[in-house]
Image 1 (cartoon, helix red, strand yellow):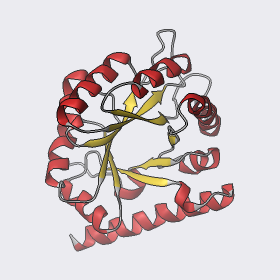
Image 2: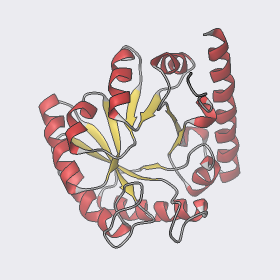
Image 3: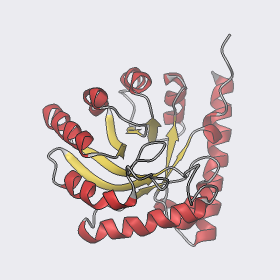
Image 4: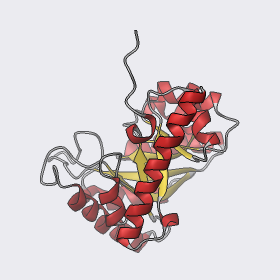
Length: 239
């Protein structure tokens, strides 16, 4: 465990240094950017070490992994973010631990989240996941709604009991006009976020950038970056 703690501490320090440098290059204050550590596939013991090292935001993308991990770490001062595609039959479980759901991309999901948040007596923060590779159906390959669907969904979240519209999220697309153009994709997300804030001024969270492209996201103006591999490493195969 001591070796793992040292490894995580070193990795976390490197990522923090990257964020520091990216903020300096962009003329931004360091406190404008929040690091979310994506702990998917890693054990609760790692989450506990990260908390001891000062991490306050962690993210998961699969409820079946996240729910028991969140329960095991319920004594820690953490905000859990759900970042994966979310099926409505998992909503009750996710609302039990997630402070923020970053992957809201359809009206049916908003309705389900609102119902369960009210039932649980909780307020859940929501980000509209924007698909910059959206096809004609308005959906992206990895979830998300196309830019044309953002306004309607944002209004729906903002008016839903138990929910709070926090802003927008995207994953740099692998296909379409923004493939391989992370900075352009993040710039587009910032434009869309500005439009959302016209009607919802408090929705100022912009989640973008991961281990490989956090610098581009910070340069574009992201408020939150989601980093997994650069902090936790590539998990070795079991067996």
